[in-house]
Image (cartoon, rainbow, N blue to C red; front, side, top):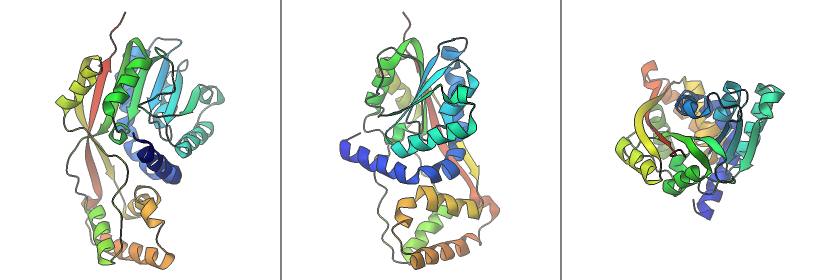
Length: 281
């Protein structure tokens, strides 16, 4: 990721870290945690297993990994100091000291991991690859830090139209009020399809590459979705509004949401998993 774009993305996640942890991390957690099953063959039974979580965010995978494997050590890498700080705080709050002590939180990017060659048995990455300037560079770095026989597993968004009526109503109200909402900044490049994703992993040197689809699902309530939008997904825009404008936006949006059937709040988004192995000795 270029320097300016990386700074913009990191700054954004610094600002939304608390809201992300409360409202968005639980939505993607079930899909993210499946990565641990995918890399289990490279970790199970190893007393000294080392795992790297690339784009770790607030540490959902990191905490689950050290709880699942009592002897494993995990390095969580993210470009956002705010996300790392929130992750560290959550680990201290939710894990036993012995488990939290096996977590190492490091500032860094997927394209330049702050790790030595051949130091890990597994590399996982949950909903971060779409933010990379160069996914190929990120995969080459994963290959570099893996030991022979190690595995990489990634989950991220699949390119698709994503209509969601509660969000569409939010954007319609913004237009109705004549507000200027800038386009989302930073990089967003989901995988196009399973075959191209698997091919990218193979080109990075991995073997037994495969890709398959999945879905992120959430049944929102109006209150929860408004909170998620204002505290996480659209935090930066909402923060620019004065109190009367923000209150007017929220009131109009809630009025429109009240007209929807409960079924309209069922969110579903396609995702893709990609797995590969570094050839053994």
